[in-house]
Each structure stands twice: as structure tokens, then as C-alpha cells.
Length: 490
Image (cartoon, rainbow, N blue to C red; front, side, top):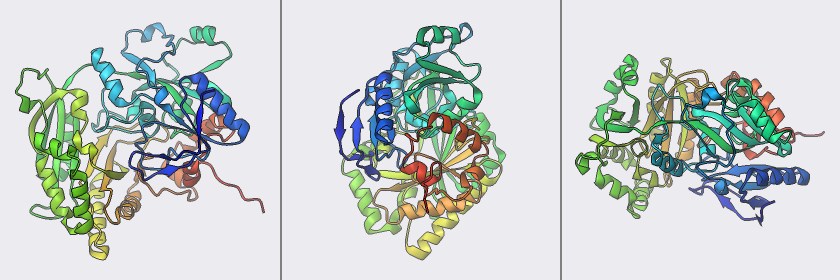
């Protein structure tokens, strides 16, 4: 078993979540993970795997043994695939679960391949984005877990499972001949749809097989529009059907325009290597300012000292991002750039695209207005609307419905930011809103709440009961949301 550190504080990248686990391990193989899980069970403590620490929620915290997965970060996993013949022509990559999107993109690019979609940030691990159903924007694309075809997971008892859909890529005879009784191949749609978004509750994801596509290039166009036009376009729906990617930054305040918006579209283009530099880059001044070390302190100082500047700052930020053309390789365009460096946190709520997504904008305006008038609390960053195809994963925010994901971003020193996110969440829940597991949320173990939110939650629980039979993957998060519960003996 690998070496460990004792009682060292672990913090996420922003520092808004921290814990002092009993031990911190850095496993380098599936065998290491097996041994750690078994040792934890023998000691009667829990285990949780963490990657880049990008989650702003408590989803990664554990009081027991914490596993850092940066030792499980190869773009080509050492685990064999044993592909069925009918899968051999598909573009498949099995990587270690601890690899970050950034390094995976570099590997794929070098091999003439690319992810079909990704979020706006590339420092999360592949296991992390899958476990929390992280997503990009484009109504023909589901969340990132929908690109998974197979995964190797260490569950309770140190048991290793390869979990796939019923028609999955692994040849059962070849797998069994190689591993015998030491590992188990499960090709079952129910298991796969449960484990696909497991929030770390089902075990430690050690490898992931993704289906990718040939390397491609995108053109990004960013335009300023008032909300009235964006609203009309969303009701019509053509902007979602006609663009590969479509997303909106939205201000809930009236200034020169009623609720200014930045609309971003991305579509295929040719290799732009011969185009002028300004066509192959975003606004260099905005990128430089965002990356400048003093910028975060200045922005936070402004919203801290005079929060009423927030509406003005938001509209100017939206205008600064306008760009008629930015052409580059796909993963560079999908990454939103230096804005990721600004110290901020966010909550995110997904509402169904059945008309309630239009009502959601009105709800945001209402909450922001009340917070400003009653408590001098302001939304400090533009709100993001992204559009995601329905997913079959039982605990995905997009489960069973096309979804508008609403990201509620706050600068780290914004007064009342957490409370404002909670108020948005409460209001959006009335419109069928489901919170993002990895972002700030106030979801609690209210009676029957998860069953109401997720129709397939009982099916998810059955698989959870098998893979977490010893309770070794329980955590403060599972207790808070009601997945696991403390018992009182009278």
C-alpha cells in the first residue's frame, strides 16, 4: 500500500472547502486503491477521491482517508481494453481517471483527435467532470459523462468492476480469461446509468474510456444583445438548432439596456493557421487584464467597498468580451480563457427547456432586484445560460430532459454572495431546477426531495447499495443531501 500523510489539511483550489482527513494517500495504481479501500474498511473509516479540487461544494470532503488521484493521470491507461470486433473502428481512448482535461486535450491533439465538447475550464480531472455531470453548451450534446463508454472502478471491499452499457466495448471472454475472478465485468444499462454520475459515492474511478472525434476547428462569435432579443430567439429555438454551440451571459440589471447579454456561438471552421493573429485570438487586452495579478484584487475591492458598482461592471465586462471572430483548434475555443483565473465561486441550477427556462430569467431578475432593494446585495458577475441535451444518467442534472444550465457566478469577496445563490436556488427549484453537484448548493436531506427531483433515484440507490455496501464511501456530502443518514438509537 502506498505511503500516506497524517492529519494534513486539504483545501479546494479556492479555499472555500477544507477538511483535516485522518490520512492523505497518493495511489499510483488500481492495486494501490484496492489496498487503501480495504484498509479503510478494516479501520472503520471512509474514503474519498479528489482530483484538482475544482468543486466549490463539499462533494469531495471526507473525514477518513483522502485519495489524491494525480498519480493516476496517464492519457493512455495501462489497463487493457479487450475490444469487441465491432468496436475496433471507433475512436476510443482509455485514460486514467485522474488526468486533467488540459493534459488529455494535449494528448488527443497530438494524435489528431479531440473531445466532442467540454466545459469552459480545463483543469478538472476527467473522473471529476464525469462524476458531477459537468457540461458544455450545445443542445445536440449531453454532459461529459455521456461520452463515456466504459470505466474501471474500485468499490467496497476493494472489488474492481469494469462497468459498461449492455452493448459495451469489452469482449467478456477475453476480459475473464485475463483477470479470472479477480475483477468483474458488468455490462448492464442500469448499472452504467447509475455509476455514470456517482458523485464519488460508488467508489474510486480509476480509468475511463471516452469516445472522441477527429481534430477540428471552431469559429467563436460574441455579440451584444438586449435580453428581449435573446428571449425571443430562445422561444423560437432556431439559434439552438443552427449553431453547434450557443450560450449566453446575462445581467439581471437594467442600465443603458434592459438586461444586457453577450451571446456566444461556435461552429465548425477550417484550419485558421494562415489567418491574421487577431482572428486567431480573443481580445488580447481583456485576456491580459484578466491574467494580470492585481486584477482580482482590484475587482474584489470594488465590489467589497461599493457593491452598487456591480451592474455597471457587469455591462462593461459583457461589452469588453464582444468579438466578431475567433478561430482556433476546438479545445482552445471551448476554454473561456483567462477569465478562469479570477477568484470566484458559483452555484449552478438546471431548469427544463419546456418554457420554464424562459420563466427562469424572470425569476433571476426578481431575486436580484429584491436582494438589492432589501439588503444592498448585488449579483457581482454575469450569469451564464448554457444548453445541454437530455442525459440517461440517473443523477445527472440533465436526466430525462433537455436543460438550460444557469451558472450563478460570484466574485470571492462579494458580500452576500452565498446567500444570493441560495435565494436563486430556492426560486429556481419551483421551476424544476436541479443543482450542480460540484458547485455551491444548499440541497438538504429534506424528506423525499431527491426522489422528487430524480425519478430514477431508487434505481441509483440500488446500485449504490451494492458498490458502497460497507458505507466506506459515505461522507459529509452524502449525509447532507440524504444519500446516507446518521442513525439515532433511543
